[in-house]
Length: 102
Length: 139
Length: 82
Image (cartoon, rainbow over all chains, first blue to last red; front, side, top):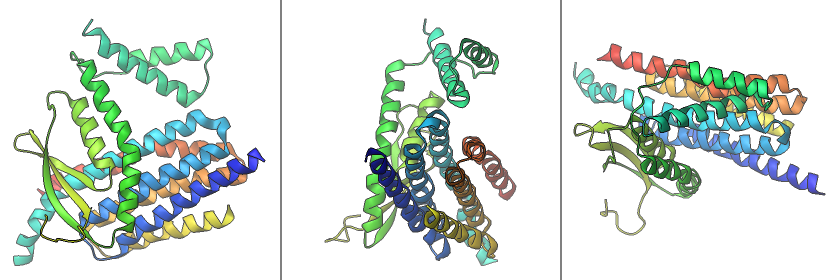
């Protein structure tokens, strides 16, 4: 009984993560501003993947040290990468009107 | 003591990462991890205010559930507006504190740090908020 | 579990399609970062489905190494563009 409860919770977490993935990746296909795409990607890749990792953690509790490391690495790396992408693209965005005038 | 504390903290952090990586708590493995933690090059240690560090860490950890709440609000929002804002930086003397601040702000889906402005005293923030329902002039 | 895996692969197709389209290089970079973390998660789920932790180890290593290369590339691009 308890095993099936854990299974269902983990499936729920995995499904929620998948929904966040789709919601956050869809704006990539649309014509929206670059930064709003980055906001959506942070939802999808950081938060959705963290939910999925939690679901996997419930499924294989024996491997918790490595999964915790993966969770930590995922959240920190993705967040900092979002910041770096936003910060580095800034001069490019400021310069685009000049290029269009040419 | 003030110089020893950051050293101990960084070594403990590296040892914890080593233990997570190898998932093995035998004495030999702990010894190897300790040697590696000591041998890895480290940034110039500076006297570090422990209270501020703990506060920033706690705020970063609190940002994680808050990020999920904001994600839900963003998903169910009918329309969004984009704003550029800025927030005063707490302390720019310590790179670690700045890192934790940037991490905390960027983790939440509403806001992304674009960089430091005003000579490093303020963060430049791009934020994506659900549009206010009644009055649109409240930007 | 199999349905979930198919869903994940479908979600993976979105950033791949974006990266194949002719678009701005920054959009492409964001799409590639998305591909990287999605593939790592798919590796982990496959390892659970097949009950083979060796695969999962690869996923964990990919996740904890992160996209450090892409990070460097972003910095390099900014320098080149200036």
